[in-house]
Image 1 (spheres, rainbow, N blue to C red):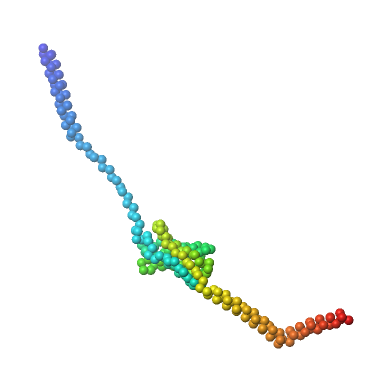
Image 2 (cartoon, helix red, strand yellow):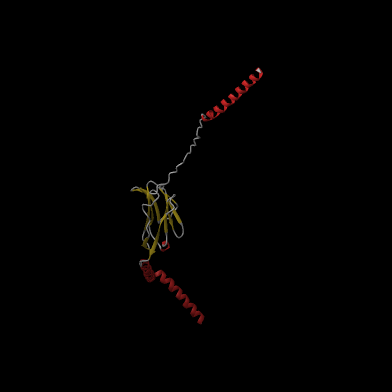
Length: 215
């Protein structure tokens, strides 16, 4: 009988222990603190170019000039964004002016390019000292590196009658110049005895040859 009582006590003790374990398990789970995972996101902000800087303060304008007259094209951008190119497209060649450095391609003497900082802008100037008919239709294009838009202008050359007047003057001058040369030559022949003797000697020799032939 005592052995049975001991076994019952042991079994009761085991049951009580299991009950305690079941009760403490949820409380321990509840006491567990879950720390949220913090994700740090780094955002890179790229500053966009100022639209006001990517603009043209001085736009090149179309020009209409008479043949022989000079032609001047200008283009300017804000000082905040001074880098740009001003290209002169001629019928036989193209020339680029890079500002603000002022670098100019090899250009003929009649064409002159320059860069300058003036009144808060980077200004480029193309000057064609004397226009000709071959310059008709010449274009200039102003372009900023980060600006998709370009500013352009065209040169128109017309004839105001001066070329015809010059041509007529040259023809008349050439005609009178020829007459003057012949007149001076004739006067020199009349006054030069040496030349007259030379011509007379030839005539006498021709006459003697004719006489001998007849005989």
